[in-house]
Every structure is written in structure tokens, then in C-alpha cells.
Length: 374
Image 1 (cartoon, rainbow, N blue to C red):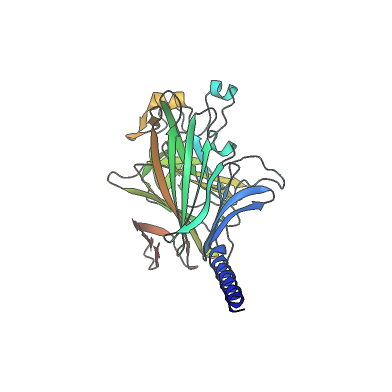
Image 2 (cartoon, rainbow, N blue to C red; image 1 turned 90 degrees about the vertical axis):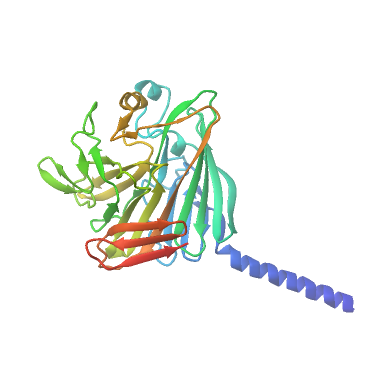
């Protein structure tokens, strides 16, 4: 009888312990969900939720759990459409922009294959050492390259670290490009959004070859067709639509932010300029209102096929493509984050960044300072 009671008590304790563990972990780690039939890998903490779409690998959702406002609501498909597609923050890999005429005949898509293929979920989200981490990968059928992504969400802060391992699995060496293409859209994006960066000088993509860098422009206010345009703002006219920039010599990290004070939200990116020396800003309007803004950082700033890129080679001393030998790999990374901001926030003047800390300083004499430790 005593043995039977002990067994019952032990089983009860085990069940209780398992239930407690489930409660503690179920909110922090969610492996996968289906959104209108599309598979998504989900990382969730007590503060924020991050989702990656498996059909194309895009980061499609990053929001505070108490508000639900997602900046990356760009190019979402119609209900029932399960085909891979670029959405939200997608990657342009193995190129940025259009293929050559012959490559297009052979089936190479615009911006490369990475957002046009189904990705493989290598490991579901797990909680370890204060981070929720998942891995996923893709293989480019024509490009002959692979990319393995490790995404780690801080359990205590709205910060996501992404590392991507690029491998050339061709038998021969290859030139390639990779551009991160975060695309913000309504309802986060409206006339109140302010885009800030520590970018320096650049050029307009509409300027034709062979000297697209003439005239040189400087972030953020530029002269365009007889008027002054603030690239940090967007209302009813998106021209010039695409501009590309480098950073001052000696700068270690690039950063770009989009702030909407009226909605109390800021989204930002930080990356090492050795990985991604270029920032390109895409602006798009529809029906006289902001429709999309691309905060694109990558290995190139020239929106041309490889023949034109290899003819040009550099602009402002920065290379326009990368190279990998056969079977060679390289890792690149970035950090993206959210922050709550007051309604009187003027925008970002500077960001101090070190491993584990992001400090956002308000511009134009503003006194708001936001510190994020992760």
C-alpha cells in the first residue's frame, strides 16, 4: 500500500513538473505556425515576437506583444498563395537587381533565387543562455550557393541577432552579391516616419552608366531637379526612388532606423561595414501616400547586372561585389531591434553600439536617450 502511494505521489510530482516546464517555455519558444497556409518559424519572448516565412526565408513579423504593430507588412500574398516570394525583410542573393539578358533567358529571377525557393528549417527554436535560437537554410539551384541562417532573439530585450553562413558549392569560384532588403510598409509606415542613418555620400541609381556616381549626393538632404529633397522623409513623391551610400572612412558599424513617433515605435539595424559596406534607400508611394521604404544594406551599391558591375568594379573606393573560391564559406551578420519612443521624438542622431548594448541618442538637440541591453 505504501509503495502504491509513493508511486502515485511521484507520478503526480512528475506531471506537475512537466506542466510547469511547459508553462515556462511555451510562451518563450514557439517552433512553427501556419498563417493562411504559409509555414513560419516563430521566436517569441515575453516582450516580442519574430516570424520568418519558410517560402522565401523572409523576416515577415517583428512586433511588441502588447501592441502588435509590425513594420514589415510589405508584399504579403493573397490568402491561399503558398508560393515562395519576397516579403517584409527578404534577402537579395546571389545578386541585387536584374540578371543579364542571357541569365534572364535561362530563368534567373530579379534579386536572385533566395526569396524564390522554399527554405529548410534546420533546427526549431530553443531557449539557451538567454537567447531563443533557430536555424534555417536555402540552396540556390542555379547560383550554386547555400546560405545558413542562425537567428537569435534575446529573451530580455527586443533585439534579434542574425548570422548567415554563405558557401560556394560550385566547382569553380564565383562573384556574388548579398543585400539585406528590409521593407517597411503601412500601417507602421506613414508620413510621420523618419529614416535616419550614419551614411555619408552616395549617388542616385537613375543616373546612367558609366558614371552613376556623378553627381555625388550627401545623406540625407540632396538637390534633385531644382529642389531640395529630404531622403529621410516620404510623403507623396518618392523620386529619386533609389539612392545608395557609403560611410565615412574609419566608421566600424553602419546603422539605419525608421521612427514613427505618432505610433511610438522605432525599428533599427546595425551591421559591421566589413560585411556590408553599402546602404541603399528605396522609396515608394501609391495613391499619393507612402507605400514602402527599403532600408537595404549589402555588398553592393550598384543596381546593375554583373557585366556592368565587373566593368565598373568600385565606386567611392568601395567594391561592388564579393568573391568566393570553390567550397569557400564566409559569415556575415547584423542586429535588428525595436524600441518604444515618445510622441515628441525627433529622430536618431547617433547610436552607440557594443556587444550587448545599444544606446540611441535623439537628434536635433532632443534629450531622449534610449538604452537597450541584451
